[in-house]
Image (cartoon, rainbow, N blue to C red; front, side):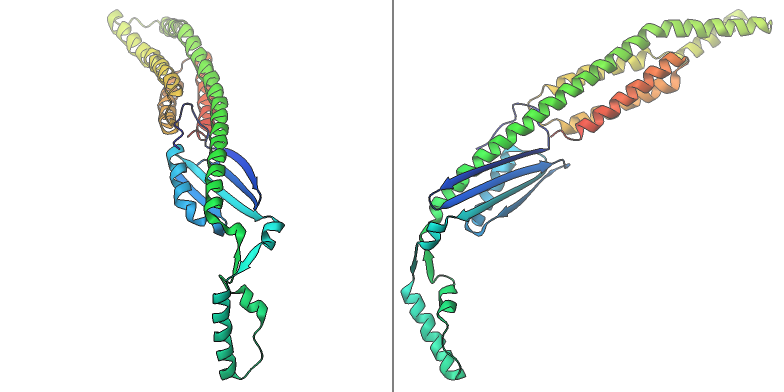
Length: 293
């Protein structure tokens, strides 16, 4: 019964199936929303309530997180409602007991309808539970399959969006990388010009050292390299067959750290702009990732 994860899945999904038999119909609905762990809730009609542990186990094998609700409802057909036997020995016993009570209480007569309503007196042929249970299991399995497929289709759509966002981040990293030497040169020239303006004849070597330290402070190549590594890592996580939501969450924190440093080191508006753009893209990815199993 285990549906192994071949694809990335969304945590939101819905499926509904119905099976109609001579004795009536069964309807199964499964829906889910995101949740940090797996939570399952069942609403089952009395006839199939004892199957709950079985259904729960099927879900547990197929789904690793999300809040999942399953509802199975049974409707008897009118003809099968008319098709019943009376448990005569039980009815007799109840009537005798009722008469005895009546004699003592010295009151009224026995109401036949009350006797018929007594649990177990009327035996409905449709209540062949084994048959009902067999059908319920088939129905649940079909609904679960369709539910998992829907979660995977949604997962594919999210993967598509995330890959686009990663491409955009990669572009921003490229443009910062291309612009960085220009920005550093610009910073250096500006400082030299300032120093010339105030005719400062400082020791040349000391000045070089200051410029070097400053350039190091403004050099973002390490951050850019790390962003590249994160992009590659995230792309490979997106191709993994097992549930990846938590790992992607962690990657977003890593991305954020580099983006923040980039922003704080920036010396030219062009770089600041790219850093902001990267942060926006990370935030958009984070929103999508919340729905991934």
